[in-house]
Image 1 (cartoon, rainbow, N blue to C red):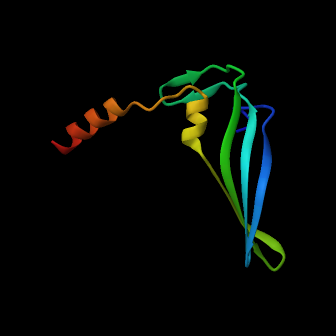
Image 2 (cartoon, rainbow, N blue to C red):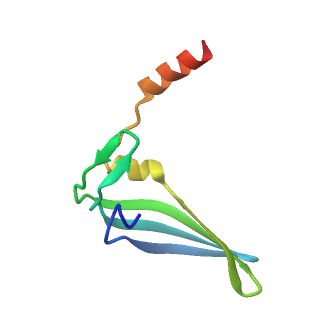
Length: 99
């Protein structure tokens, strides 16, 4: 993410403590200073502001962080970068694999 947006930061919204799990609702924010390498090629930076919804999960054991996972709204991020889904190609590809 730091390559995607050099000014990346997190805006924390809510914390939820459930036993040994801490869940955090947040937004990953920054400016698209890229470049962003994709399977189809490189998307050059545009400077567009990103605001990607995300959730962090911290698993704590004996007062120490045992595991950390971050789940980001990648579909939102891609839309903000101008990457639109190509449903027609996906339908065509699925039809050829099932025939």
